[in-house]
Length: 397
Image (cartoon, rainbow, N blue to C red):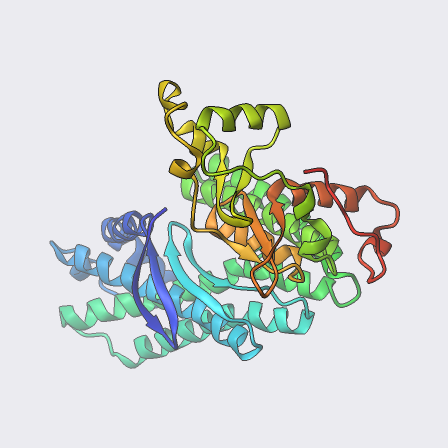
C-alpha cells in the first residue's frame, strides 16, 4: 500500500500507510460508541470513579473517541521509537517507522544476530509502553474527581491510555514471532543455538500462536481484526524464517560465485527487432539480455519489455526502442544477500555485475540466486560451500 511521510523523530522518518487512514477513524468510532461500557470497565479495573452519565453525553463521545484513538497510536509510535533508538545505539540504522492497519512497525535495515542486542531491542518497545501506561495512570491519579466535564473527559482518556498501553506491552510480549515476544524468544534460544536454528524454532512457535489467535478471534470472540492480525503474524514468521535460512546458506558466498560470467551471457544489439528478440528468448529459454553496442553494455531488455509491443508492431520496433537504460549494477565481491536485497527493493529480475572500472563481468538474476540456494541446501558439503576455498557455484544461465 502507498505510504505518506508525515515527519521524522531523531532523524527517523514517520510514515502513514493508507490502511492506517481507515483504522484510525474506525478506532475512534469504536471508542466513541462504547464510552459508557468502557467507563464501567475502567471503574471496575482501576477504581477510576468516572461518571458515565457525564461522559456519554451528546457529541462528547466523539471527542473522547478521537482523542483516545490519537493518544493510543501516538503510544504505538513511541513504542516503535523505543525499538529504533536502541537499534541505532547498536549501529543498526532504521529505514522508517510506519503506522498501518495493525499498529506500527520499525523497519531495520538489518537484524542483529547477537542475541544480547536483539533482546535489548525487542524489550525496549514494551518497556516504553509500560512507562507510558504508568505515566498516564499517575497523571490520571493526580486529577481529582470533579463535576467539570473537561477534567472528567481528561481523566477518562488518561485512564484508557494507562490500561491500553499496559495491554499493548503484554500483548506484544506474547511469543508470536516476529512480534516482540517472539524476538525475545529467538534471542534466548540463540544463546546456545545457531541463529538460523533459533529463528526456525521461534518461527514455528509463532505460527502455532498465530493459528490459536486466529481461531480465538474467529470462533470465540468473533473479532475479524484478531483473525487478520493472526494471518499477518503467520506470514511474517514464515517470511523471516525463510530470509534467515537464506542468509545462513549464503554466508561467505559472493556475487561472483553465483553470477553467470560475461563469456557465457548472450547479448543482443539495439538494432534487433522485438520479434527476433522474442524468438531468441524462446530458443534459448531466457527472459532477459544485456544490450551491447560497440563492446559496451548500453541497456537491459526483458520479456515484459517485449510484451509491451503489440504483435503487429514487433517487426517495426527494435530492442533499442524498448530496452531499459537505467541499469542497476553490483560489484563481484558483494555478498549475495546484498544483491537479493537490491533486486527486491528495485523490483527487477537481474543485475549487471561490473568491476570498479565499469567493465562488464557477468549477469546476476533471481533464478541464479534461487538455483544456488537449492544447490547449497541439498549439498552434503554445506560447510565447504561457505568456506573460502569452496568451489564456485555456476548455475546454468
